[in-house]
Image (cartoon, rainbow, N blue to C red; front, top):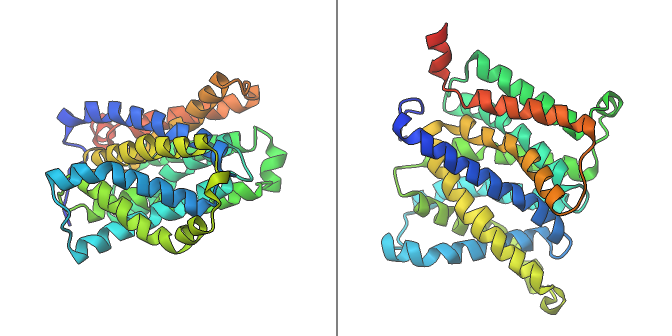
Length: 307
């Protein structure tokens, strides 16, 4: 397994954090777009089309720069990673039939804590006391927003059907960054991104292919296809590449911590689209989430130097 130093790449970390801010902005739009088109296609078909379009966008680049030869062992590595993504995106599109973009973006903030647990177990990533506290605070902030600051709702565990489905997807997505760290063998990140998309298509083909075959294409609006192209290009190809580029430099937990920005970004997008402002009692939870994200970006050895 290739080993990386996540704390001694200071020369690269500055621009990686800027790239992850861009990545968070792009990914946050996928919740709103997904909510808009969730009822237009079967979730498996929608995810399959998204992966196919994304793979086709990368195909000329990969073919010209690196060639299309890949070993069976590499395919198995990429399939492990893409399996997590396929489960997540299927759950995302299916859940958005029953819940909102804001709810899914907030539930996604549970992923850094789950990913941190996986990373500690699978790759022995050291979180430290301060990061553990930040992860707990992020969880509490996420719960605050999900239940709108209402303790009675929290105690009654009144999640809707979509929230439960998306949470299952989050359990799968949390494995994504540790698996990238484990299975990356030094190949160019666009190569890993391409083959993750290709193997993802293979995972999706049984369900998604059947749904596409049965689809009445004329009944799908043109703007739905345009939004799928947007998701494939910006929220898939670019975000996958940026995430996979960041993981070896800043580590799985710090990379996934940028998902704490999603609720605020989704709220901002909703306001711009005229969907109104959120309830005031939701805002303290978002403040806590953002504070947790900032703490998680501080290198672990910083706290050791201070102690």
